[in-house]
Length: 339
Ligand code: NAD
Ligand code: TYD
Image: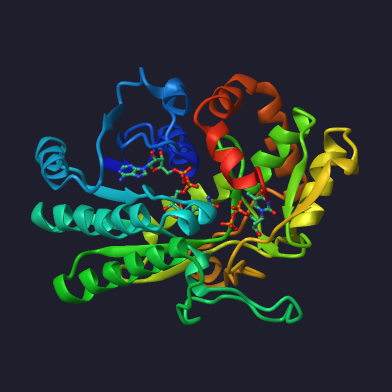
């Protein structure tokens, strides 16, 4: 089987490429990535020489380039991870989010249609459901929770999801969608909460906590997400949405304090900064459907996953130090300089 993985030079796509080549060595994996600021070829360095792997630098919005690659490779499955993924960047500049996340999704699905209705999986997010109140721990996102977005990022992902379901109904394209909670693990770009706090701690820099740090996220180890996607692609029901996540809700401030403790630093590094505009309060997934239908459950406990993740950042300093020493510094100054 030939699988197209878009966005495979990013965090989750990169982990998925490694997972897939390990678990299904008989498959051919073709990674399509534009190599934006978030794409990093060093994430793929360990598999670059694998004869079952090919990397192609390509924008998923480049219709001609995408069609030509379909013609050449004749994929059996397309898994679309490629996206602009950072909420804060979407607040600063929404345009590229609409382009990549919506137009890019449509372009990939058009190619799937043009080449015999290729099986298509959309990697989406729980953020399409908006947020839940902090004082209602009994509420969770299910697959029937209405779409109700807060940020340009989540709106662009929701727009893509609506298109995916429209292509299913209108053209019969064999699609599935997974909506996952916040991931953490190796190769996570240091603009996101967990790697940012690890990197800043290691550099003894202030730890910028938005608002009062009470917002809650439901954290999932990235490999558990990869397993869920693999299961959905192989055994999921066409035309269905699956929520992925699992009862691991934590307030941001508790995550930051845990990282400080693990790294033997001092809580005086914590700096409360101006809150994110439109900041979602709480995300919490109900994974009953994927559990009942596909037998999926998260396997990595947060206490173990966060230790493994911190150790990875300690063991792979050059991976993230190279990122934060470049253009990232301008981003950081702009976002956090006067916050
Ligand atoms: P990321 O920002 O780390 O990586 C995105 C990758 O996509 C990068 O390699 C980038 O170069 C590539 N890319 C961007 N625009 C492209 C384009 N036009 N054409 C081709 N490649 C392009 O993102 P991530 O955190 O790995 O997220 C992957 C997917 O998972 C996204 O669709 C995101 O919405 C979704 N998701 C992420 C999380 C999370 O916690 N990170 C949770 C749920 C869902
Ligand atoms: P993030 O990793 O950007 O993921 P998302 O917004 O998609 O959930 O942020 C996770 C939480 O951490 C979110 O509530 C915002 C907060 N946060 C901070 O407090 N400080 C930071 O520097 C960052 C990047 C995020």
